[in-house]
Amino acid sequence: MKLSNLQKKLEKSEQYLPAEDTFFLADQLNGLTGKSALDIGCGSGYLTRILKSSFNLVVGTDISFNTLLEQNYKTQNTICCNSADALNPKFDLIICNLPYLATDEIIDVATDGGKDGLELPMEIITSALAHLSHKGKFLFVTSSLSDYMGLVDFVNSQNFEAQIIAKKKLFFEELIIVEVNHSLS
Image (cartoon, rainbow, N blue to C red; front, side):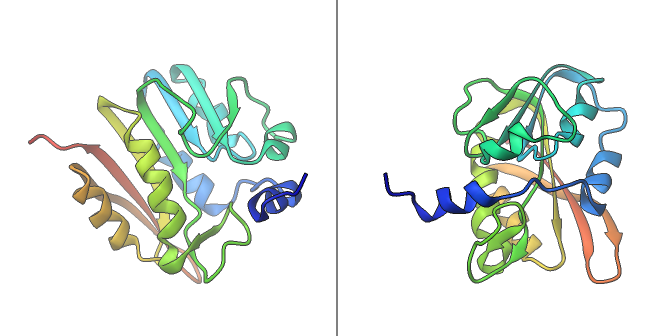
């Protein structure tokens, strides 16, 4: 059987270990509770495990089966799929540490966002929005190294409201947390 380029990349992919952007997103989870939460691109399971203490049902998805097998922070309810594409339920909270780096070619699906850092993030966001409950919230982390305002504009064009709720300056970039809610109109 001939493997696609993506399958070859995923076969060799390593899990994205918690880093500054992961911890920044984790800080935004304090005080959030609900019935259900989804961690898209759950990687090591770090954020998924945090969500377990505040939500009745927590699901983590990752496009890399190997990453799910080798999670450092083992969690239940992990599904190997593209974003939330294989899921049916709506979630009270969806989180994602987007692959936001602006790259000409997507080599590492954990970090490379494609042209202007928009290509993969827009696909992930589209998938996530379809699974957001009416009063739900979607939080994602992105960076000043990408066209983060392009992501905000994209979300707003989908009849949702996106706003920047936190920023954190690092040596080489600024991390940005965007909150998405259903539009009131």
